[in-house]
Length: 619
Picture 1: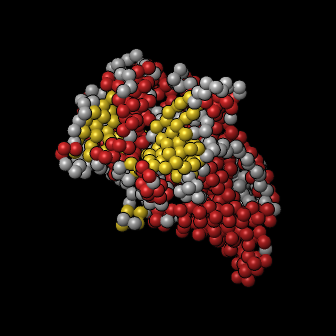
Picture 2: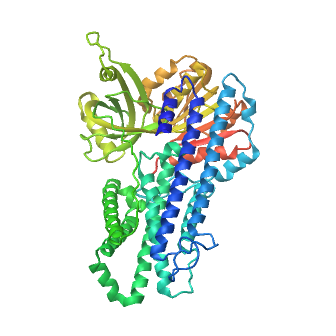
Picture 3: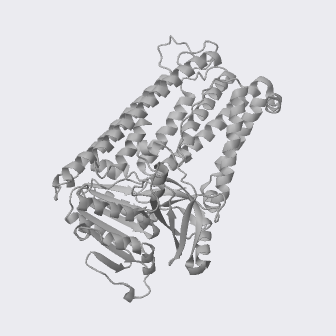
């Protein structure tokens, strides 16, 4: 937690020391993570090595479970030894990767602070460009990645991973299969082989539940440590869950086979109904199977609120079943407790306004100061709208204000905090459920607005800063502008202060109607009034469904409006003709827009040094 505190201090002092503390603390957190992962691996190795002597399993290497135990003197490397070596290599590789990426960004930022051309960083590395084009950024097939696969308007079967994600998932699945079957002597009687497979699949199912639960948490500490988005962890959570379900089923089937060989169906029935720990284990497996069907993408998207509460109830049932099963079976186990920070800021006064284009502007006056970074989001809980629901929304704008009372003198820390207020704003597009209720209530209220109480949890995210890029292109579709506006504000301020490498900032916003401009009008007015804004920022607005040509007009040379949808290839070619330094391309919008921008970036990897950042939220 010392390293976490150091990282937070680095973020708070970013205007004074933008990169030095940040890169140091990031390296420390990586080493901190690797150290504890290695310790966990060693503890797991010795724990399971001791356990296998009591269970007759072959996890420690040596001969099979025919009564000779683990055979610690065996020269054959044990399964846990292989697992430990693999984990150590993976940790070291990822640590080197992270240190290398952060070091490049750090050096690039420092070098480019007083360099307006940045030609060295504009040239691509052939090998790195090929890796990004064909693996890191590449979809499984030609183009489609974040665009949802829909069987109909009401049936959504999800999205496809990238090639890099697919390789990781396949390797993870493959190693789990390997650990289940490695070194089992299949020449032994079927009952013995089934018992060995039963032990392995049961242990792996429980062990895999540790990362499964961690990746399910929205305040997952690994997001900041590993610099991975919630979207990536959500993908890993879903597939890890499927692996756990398969291992639980294999565990139950293996137990059933060994029990059937020993006493037939009568023995299985007697064990399930008469042995408590087996009964609870059977309940847990049934709950796992129900979860597997219940998490089907079509059902999850069509009935999300029902899915969420049923999912939580089934998970609780699984945990109860596993606890009674393992304790009843006198299995050796360890408790691992960790601090999970809660970021609730208390009920705050909130203004909700109905805006044109079926959107609501939510402005929260936080009870205490809130540290905010561009690209972050928060979970909002409004009891007046939804009693049991909280939803994530990008923080579109934040302002700090001091509530100075000349008649009141600050006597303690609490008085100082009361004087410092943070105001955060969100734009919420009305869809279904919570967002629809919110908009309808605001629309029906006098003046199109009402006050309510709101709890905010967060902030989360904000891992992809654009400070080290000389050229920055940001694409937004519809309400995706809420993610890009804070980045624009941050980069323009950094350019004026000389703390970022950015020399060219282009914002491309695609909207359906000019009335959507009202969503961010007050904030965009503030950005356009910022110092040196004209030197660095250009804004291009594309109206896909204008009612007439009279609605299309460009206020100035740096703020232009066009009818129709943009040609992303043309826009990127224009910017790359005069590219300054490395280029960062960010997109937040529909899946189709994200895939189009991804394709354009991949096609130009060898023409310039271009990085791609996609902000998406899948569930």
